[in-house]
Image 1 (cartoon, helix red, strand yellow):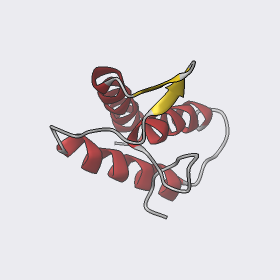
Image 2 (spheres, helix red, strand yellow; image 1 turned 120 degrees about the vertical axis):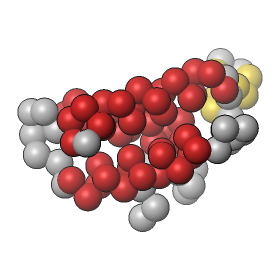
Image 3 (cartoon, one colour; image 1 turned 45 degrees about the horizontal axis):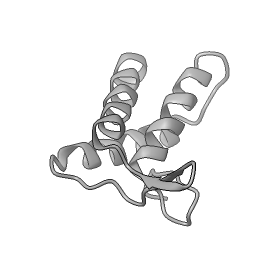
Amino acid sequence: EDGSWGFFRRGTAEETAYVLTALLHYSRINAIDADVLHRGAEYLEHEYQEADQVYVPELWIAKCLYAPHGIVRSAIIAALMLYDELLG
């Protein structure tokens, strides 16, 4: 509803960035509801504006919880850049 995606009943910036990137690539071949893409991008733009954002929840890597700030932020930027390139 808010444009985010996530596994735990609540969307996360990291998972939304991955899903939006995948959907944008998929939309080159098959039609995707543009509203879904716009809401995803709006959610990420809001998350990106939070410069000191702590990305939660941390996701499991092996047996540890892990939320690498730089990697998550770069996934958000990449998704927004692709969105802007294709639909902006």
